[in-house]
Length: 633
Image (tube, rainbow, N blue to C red; front, side, top):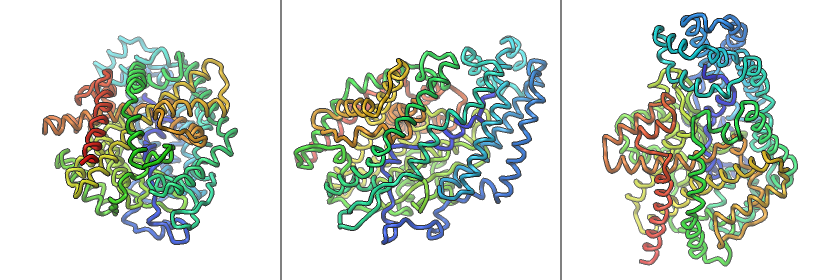
C-alpha cells in the first residue's frame, strides 16, 4: 500500500548518503606506493562486508528474484476486489508487504555488491535487473492506492474496526487519505510507474559518470610525487597545509566538470524536468511541494530554514575572516575553507582505535546503544577501506526488513574518518532500532529525520574529544572541527537548498538554465554566504555540476534541519539524563509510525519553530568566541 517497492524509495533507503562525508573522505594511507588503490583481496576480511548475511549464495538471490518475477502475475488476482471485504483488502496489503520485503532484500544485495567494485559487470547487471523488476512490480501493483482511495472513507474505517489484521495499517490509511488529491487513476498510476526508469535516467547517468567514468588529472603532491586525483584524495588535500597543493587538486577536481559542462547541464535540466513532470501529473503547485508532501513536511519548514539562515550569515562571515587572519593570507579562496589551521596537532586514528573512542564518546546514550554498536563492530557490518573500483564517500544502507544495515567507509587514519564513522553509525543504529521495533509497514523512516541520529553522534564525539584534549592546540583544532562541521552541514547544505529552489523556480517559470547562468547563480550565492572576505574562483561556480544530491530533489535542506534538531536533543540528554535518553531511543525506534515532524516533537524538538535554527547560529558564535579567547591567551 505504501509502495515500498518503488525504485526511488528503495534507492533513497539504501543510499542514505551523507554528502559532506562524500566530499571529505579519503584513503591515501592504504594506497599502494605506486599511487594505485589496493585490491579487495589485499584487505583483511574482518574489515569487509559479509554479504552472506543477506544471501548465502548468488543462487539464492536468483531464486528470490524468480519468486518476485512471478509476483507480477499474482498482483492481478487482487485487482478490482479491494472494496469487497476487509479480508480481501488485508490479503492484498499483506502480499504487497511480502513483495516489498523480498524486493528490498534483493536490492540491498545487488546495490552493495555493485558498490564494492563498480567495474564488475556481473554486479552491475544484477543491479540493473532488480531495478527493472522493481519498476515492473511497481507498475503491476500501481492499482492498489487508487483502488483503496475509491473506497468510501467510512467503509475503510469500518474494515479497520472489524478486521484485526488491518489495525496495524491505521496510520498508513490516514496518510493515504491525506494524499488523495495527488493519487491518479489506476491506469495513470501504472503509466507513472512505467515511466519511473526513464525519469531516473539523469540521476543514473550522473552517478555512473561521477563514480566510474570520470577521469581526473594527475597532479604533484606535497612531495613532488605524481598522484591521480580521486574524490577521496580531494578531501584529504583540502586539509593540507600546502596551499599550492590544495589549489592544484582543487582546480584539477573541477576540470572534468567544466570540460563536460554541456553534458552535465543537460542532465541537470533533465532531472528538473522529470520532477516537473511528476509534480504536474500529481497536481502539485511546484516540484518543491511535490517533494515535501509525501513526508507531510510543510513548506514553511523549508522557508523557515532558508530565510532564518539567510538573515544570520554573520557567523559564517566571521569564520571566514578569522580563517584568513590565522592563515595570514591576502585572499581567502574556496580551497582555503577546510585547511587545517592548527597543523601542530597531528594525530592519526586507526580503525580499531576509533571503535574504542566511539564506545566511550557515545556512552551518554546508554548501555543498550553501546551493546548494539558492538554487534555491528563485531559482525562485519562495516566495509572499511578504499579499494580499486569501490564507490567513493560513505553511507549507511538504511532499513531492509529482516536484514541488519551496512556501512560503507573509505578509511585514511584522519580525525575526519572518526567523525565519518560516528556519523554513519548513527544512521546504522537508527536503521537497526527501527527494524527491530516496528512492524514492516513502519520499518522505515523519513529522510527528514535521517540525519538527526548521525549528527547527534558527531556532537557527542566532539564533546568527548574536547574534554579529553591534551593541549590548548588540540582543543583549538577540535573547535575548528566543530566550526567546519557547522559550515558543511548547516550553512553549506542550506546554501545548496536555496540554490536548488532557485534553479527549480526558474525552470518552472520557463527560463532556460545554461551553464553560464547556473555558474553565475551559484557564484553569487557562494559569495553571499561567505561574505566579502571570500574570493570566488571560477572553478567553484561549477559546483552545481558535481553535487549528486541535486538529483534527489529537495533533499539537502534536511541535513541542516536534522543538524539543528540533533544539537537540541544532545543538549537535552546532557541536561536531563535518562528521561532524554529514553526519548532519544524512542525516536530511533519510531520509524514511520508517526509523521516525521511529530516524531521529532515527541523526542522534544519542534522544527516548525525558528528556535532550533537560531540555536545553531548562536552556538557557532559561542565557539568563535571560545576560539578567539584561546588564541588570545
